[in-house]
Length: 268
Image (cartoon, rainbow, N blue to C red; front, side, top):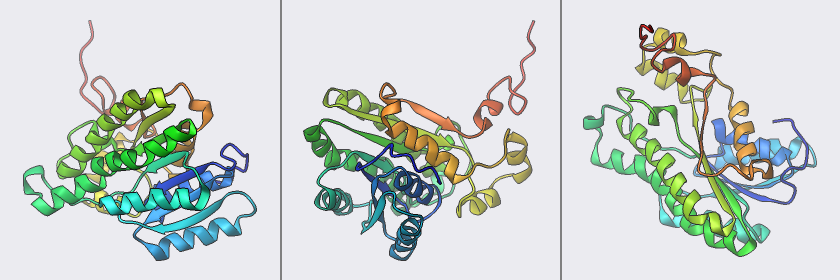
């Protein structure tokens, strides 16, 4: 978060859910690289705190707070319109915000299922519908969408969340293929277990000893995720498109068949 090179000088970056966790670290990372960051969140108090912290860090980029509910069409349209109104362009959208009802897949309420999908895959779709015309008119742009390792394997108790996160990977690939001709890239990442406010709830629902055994390098730091997000959004990743990048310290690799934490096959 302390890097100050001008990788994103004068570029405009929307970060949803930027008032805490991975989103907060991502706001700091882009601002430190010279970006005009539009922090979209429903948590106005938290968002203003992050904006003030960025301002206190020095003359790099800047942060504008936009109150927007990304589970609605109006919220998505508002955040994109504000980014263009404030800065005249839009270069990057980081779809990070999440809202979910956790529980077994058949125990999720109708409202909880819809909320989880509206905040996940539907928000990515809506952000593309709103942002792609702006990006295409200026010659290109990039999406980085935050999925989860829960999208890659079944985790009891994460039914709707896992399904929505899997949808994010799929729609990211669709955007990548269908918008490449307009100079627009789209990639996703699947974080493992990262030190955020939500981690304590997850650990309370899972076998903590098993989780810790499956970790190769321990829990991640939000700043480590932000560095990968910034890379995928940057010109350094100009040939990376339609990809999902696991950022989990080796957790998923260890759980694969044949790994120390997964099934073991007797090889001849």
